[in-house]
Length: 433
Image 1 (tube, rainbow, N blue to C red):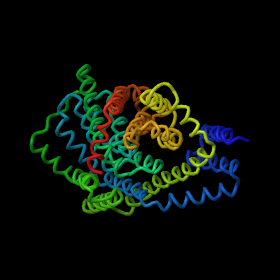
Image 2: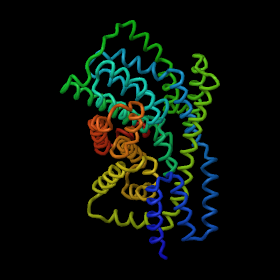
Image 3: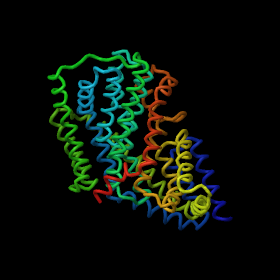
Image 4: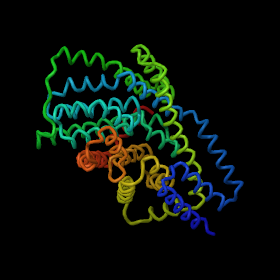
């Protein structure tokens, strides 16, 4: 049988296993292993499985995943995430939509500490939703800003999305982290602008809260200085060339552990919860990467990616037209595929096209991560929407989805700006490296 035919059969098996609710890592392992065995024989399939498993398990750069996840879990446990929210609320909570703006700001700060969209959505949801409801915020705006703000964990470094992209495309994790800084600030600003526009059109969506005096503002800012300082040390260390991403993740995790110990937040039960959650997230990430590194060689052997590269690059659309087609495909896939699954499934096909067209792989990594963020709040999957639903079970899903659309459009605008002005993403990595 022709390798391309085997490749299409393997893709069909992969999607069938996903429909049967098999975890994406195992679906990639089974279809990839079977495809390699069908094309090159069983010994080659066993060799690929063993070699890729060992390579992923011993890859030093991947140690940033457990360390940053551990750091984010400790930040939530020790109350640093609440401190950040309280400070943001004290400074802007007295304005219309101020609590929603505080939530977005706190999500951005927590994303810079945890690198996880789910952790940001859960933590900020538990902290912010009760406060917004107390001040009669509309459920759509309240849940929408938590779901959208949580997605910033995929873009603002340290981002798990950048780590996965870097491993799959063999790019620099440090460059991708730095490239995400300005787009992360831009998207946060667009979210804040969205809230301002919504509450100006309909003030009842986000009534103003009580005004804090200067003493209270300075007090909350002093309490939040710990988390701000840790973020500054980790991200500043990478930007200044003092630390590698791996070293920065270790320093950040250690500092967060020290703060949690000084705040007497650590006991046997809490440490057990933090460690188990970190292990669960790390194991899931590693399994997905192992599955991807078995599935990707199968795709290469099938010759489907190479054929697609030749076909796309010969289309009479120009590089920009092909890029728009690729991004539109990602947006559509994001409506029913989870972000990491989308990366590992599409990058072996799409990435060679991007390189052939002459686009920067670092810039493309940033815009791909933004499209992944859009998928996190896109119906019908919208993982972050279901995370917020778990925090606010009495809010109908329809209300939450209605609340996220203005933020989804803000993401689309951010994507368009980055396509039009690539230097937004490339200025910092080009000036550093």
